Image (cartoon, rainbow, N blue to C red):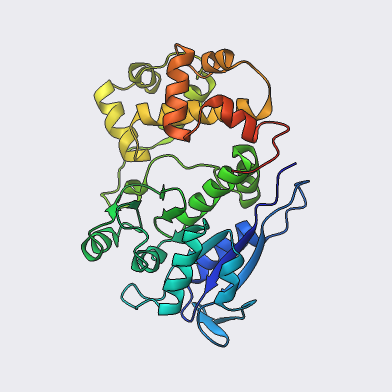
Length: 324
């Protein structure tokens, strides 16, 4: 059984971003009868006094004030009412104290501006909606802003890009706590892809392509069925009946990632599933996921996931007892 993942405190404020707030409540606040282990507790934390207005004419009543942040293992900042609106001093102090005692802080979309105001992101990587990345970098030059990704995991600090990318970041945190199998189950209930590939570059306005993308989706599915093979870009291009050059361009336009990066993602996602669901030897898993040697598999897995395959199995495999 998993240990209790702790309290998730979701900030509410006057001018609340409704969609971002809804993401946090949906993932961390909804009952999960499909699981036989403790799910997150959650509380709505008031930044401002009285009922707070949210976009769409909604009023939100909180469970308590900022004193609840002292008990939280995770704090969600669901957007912020204005990128130029100063963060209240008591909230800055509360977020800094929470970080100092080891709490995780996750911002969704413009919520990164609130998190940046605390100074906690200085010297660290972060992201936000592609429309605001230049502004974030200009106002907070000590932050290493990545404009292309859906979220950045800097350990205790997680920042996500545009609104829906908050789902990706929250599911990533669930995977950190419970493993990808549980995160995938939550994603299925949301009726969405467990982990989107590519970055937000794919959503930046660009001329509409007249080339249908069904050919690429078929190739991607074919690749998933042949991950045990040492696939190269030329193999994918051949399946798509394209030259390598054309395939590389169209794949990047459609997914925001290179074929090589996408294959790495798919191989490691498959490896995580195998490590969580069974006791198969690491050498066999490496071969099933298309790695030529167990050493190259271990290096790739650790560089992306952060721990060796053996440690990942201990934490998230059947019989694992504690979340990360």
